[in-house]
Length: 553
Image (cartoon, rainbow, N blue to C red; front, side):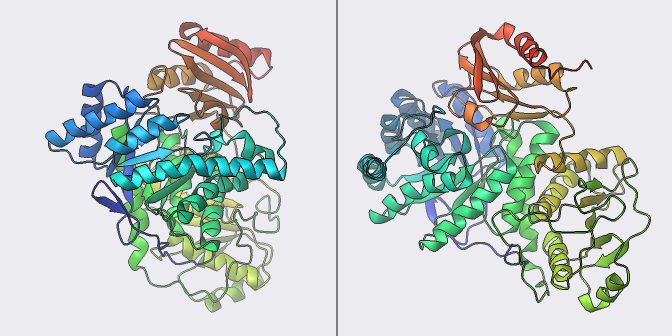
């Protein structure tokens, strides 16, 4: 975190169906339908609900030319009904569908991992420098005609990199890494710049929050180094549903928004898509309140400023700090009776002497500054510059806010601090919430940042027109069968487009294979293919038992 103040990254403006993003425009909010794109009536109705909920853009999947052309029909019917929300076509594996969509939609999303390259196969491939260069030339030859088509029709492009769908070519040189994800995007951006096409939005997503944050930070740096200022779309893929999905999304998206990164966002939930909009709007509103905040007086920079800062070095004071797991200050886990309080909103000279006199105590940092994470991080870095290694526990009191508000605000605040190196623990206060509720939020944040795994984590996609089963009811059923298994990660994915890749670090996976059929995974390996859906959950349970990971409730 180079600066403690909230300052929006300056990006170029891109017009999408009359609603521009980037530049001086507010952070735009979007969602995606989960209807079949060929269900014209259902897609129109869902687009209207999403727009009425407050979305600026709506995305629909287009598996083929037929679906792409039908998005144009949906668009026309929406306009006839007085709904002018811009529509975005989502393309995987089928460049012909991308060309067709460019004629009838406002923006086309392509995935560089499968626009030209074949889909990811998890095979180790070797490329000579000459072969790699030839592949880059093949990308340019295929991409330039698409740019020309979009230019003629005034259609914007979103280059959307997903962690789960990197090409084997990228994997061969970079592996399954943030650097590889960034390069996958940059290859296409360089082609666009060479051919003077700038109506592009870029997204780079992962279901693992730490990977997503690190990758976006890397992408911003890579673009800056090459003089690019394309606007950014943010999202945590496969976040799941309910409380966990909201916490996970707020941790990732909120961290980057707090750093001034992001021009449009989607909170991807395994729920009705219109449910995503108020969550996204609340998150944007919460972060944007910092625009008029007073500057944070610090005088030092973050010496550990990297794409993903390591844990701030600290001493172990009674099980807090050092190599100890992050603690939750709560009557249900850890009560701090003896600590040094620091108000980060006051001059450092007023509290540094007390810290020097109490080297063996944890420090609890609070602040009244509007930009609470920035203020607390600044105080922690002042301590580091003074050579102090006390454990640091950030504490924020959210007053009488409701549970959903506290969960969203705390996830954005503490996620930002954790992902900038403050990993000794956290202390969330609220007069309205019980200790149990505060504990749930705290553990959810620690799980989202992968500091502590305290419950089953579900890596579940939000669903789209490619989804091969009722995702919401299926996820509920999988949870009912497995939620007592502490510490496992289980993927529930609607189709194979991103499924196996996005859940690559999951222990087990439940993936749509064909209509009415499911494939089961152990890690990255498919162990049972095309199981009838009615048999899939019992077979998943059997698989978990056979691998020794089952425990009775």
